[in-house]
Length: 442
Image (cartoon, rainbow, N blue to C red; front, side, top):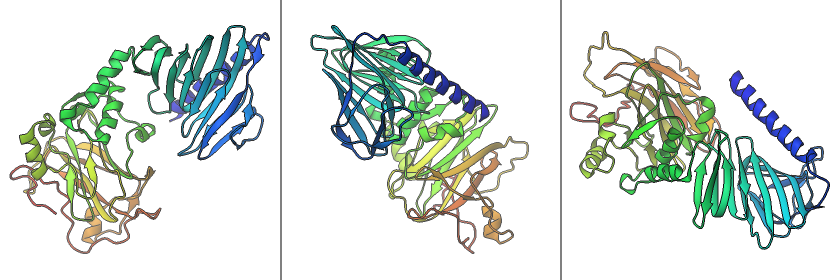
């Protein structure tokens, strides 16, 4: 955590120094240009310089060099720099007009984007342009084109050229030229638009019918030296807490993570308040997501989604594993049972003496905010202990074993702690499975 903060501080310091050098090194010759706000959506604020107070932006407002723009959720601002430049800052972004100057037949513009997404349109009619968009993780040089730069930690920076050529500095500090007559895109860890296009084609192969959650995980996996075969993913790089926002995007998300010295197949499952159970099967059943026979078998024995809108992401195997189940729309209110099983689960007790136990952790997020989980489900249901709650449920299981937690979800409220433990025997939070394994539905 401390190392991460120091790195962020270092990047921020370098970024601020670049802004200062860019301002101090500008020659005096030339005509300074100003930006005029032409469109506003939602909550947009501006300030004339770093020492000025933020104020509400209005259409027609003119701002000079050193001015900053920032946007809130569901917000955007567009401003124009004469004679032919248009800049659009998307939601949750901050951008600074470092330099805007016209010298004879050349217009030089320098934008500093701390975070967010900027679209930059240059008509380049009769004028040469020397324009750059800087961000802490990348830079995009513009030469008469329509481009977009996105840099929002912990996501990988991404540049898009809609028309024309541009030059992109990736996270490896390499300068990559891309773009032309057709749209081209490159990511911060990429070395060519062709590589980025290949990744996109793999993510959206039509026969696989992947969910948005699975696509989100695949995009993340390719930036973390991972591999995928069908819907089975593997990685040697653990997902840190700070990186979770890049992976969860539902109204309600359940996250299973584990670390082990060798390959391990833990599987996440969820039982909803409506009695639906869905989750991932043993990994060997996820190698062929486009196979109809396998798909029909999974639909009846290992449902990976629920009628109420829940679905599970990629099927991971270790050594660094993560599986995510989410509800993209408003989830049902009530008691959820969430757990993990090791490869397969047997309701008939199996002697696991001597078998390795894989440690894991379970977490829940409602609208992106971490929730409290029941830490002692077995004992609380049996009445031998009072319920205990915490943000992370931890346990370890051997092959055929299962462990679970519970959480009360009330989408309209902030508190989601379990208020009442049913006096009946422990719910059976088992995903249905192959013959002799998890046959009983809850």
